[in-house]
Image (cartoon, rainbow, N blue to C red; front, side, top):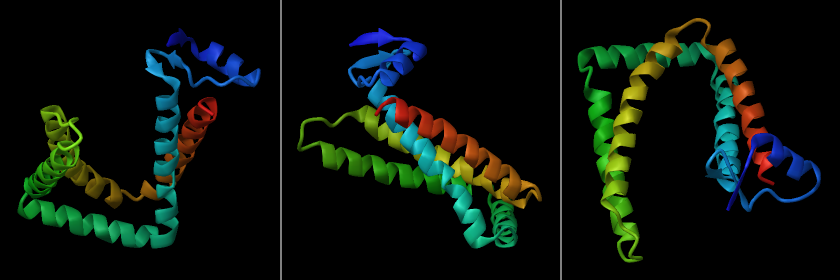
Length: 154
């Protein structure tokens, strides 16, 4: 695949030609589009703030932090355990196809541990009084960035 610059990709798109057969910054444009879709999905998290309400989120964050004070490693261990289960499921699912890889197992385990560690940060963030407005602005930025990459890959 030919590598094109960001501006060349937009030039292709504006001329009505697909950018899907190209690489941009060393990565296929289709993956930039998928990355954009994921960002747009994450931007929808702001809807949760409106549906649940900032007060309930604050109380949940407080409960989460108090739970972690009793056992600070508990979320990390739970995430690591979930990652191991996900890794085993990935190995079982991809084994018969001949595409199993030990790397996938370890990536799933690491992702689980990272999710557990992120739980700690989320608990503290939910307690902050400015969480709702900041989260809404971040969601808007994620949506615009995600839509931009998704549009570029279309």
